[in-house]
Length: 114
Length: 108
Image (cartoon, rainbow over all chains, first blue to last red; front, top):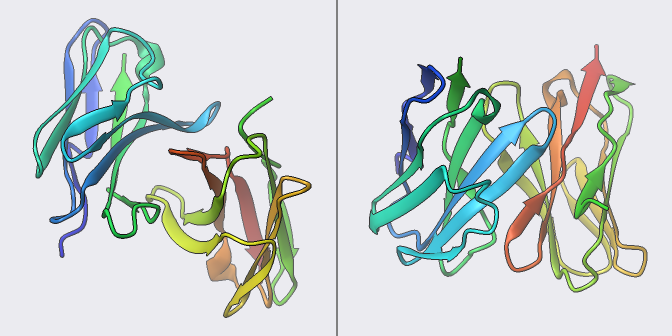
């Protein structure tokens, strides 16, 4: 299995621009999580899906952030407009229904907003 | 109070020593606990899980859980330079919450 695939690996953008991060979970996994990691706040859960349905988005910082999962093999996290404080590493993770607590992480997207 | 708290470190131990990593959590209803290892510039990977009070051993790693004290720890015996990484404590309280991590350096 290729594992969780995220793109892009690095994104540099200017304040005010729209940013879209992409994630392909492991085939057959029913849960998909978006996390953000910074030195100050550590690894924070933003939102998670079960069977493509958003279950808890209470971690989404504000309305500038949105996430979708149109099908079982693809999810996006969008920031519009982006701000410098959004600079972080964004991780996508997935897990199966049978072992939902074992998270497999993608390689992450390093986002820099200038 | 943070949901999951860890000493940020850094923690430095000599090769061959025991490294002890600690974690406390705030939600008494939490039932399952995990340790993830994250090498610099890489993603977290699961190394241990524990669900019951007491110790759980896996090779050089031992996880310890005390639900009454809301305390989880990870012991690494015979530490190796390859163990140098950040160790993240995670607690499942309906969703997976992580501590900020403790950075461990094992010196040859």
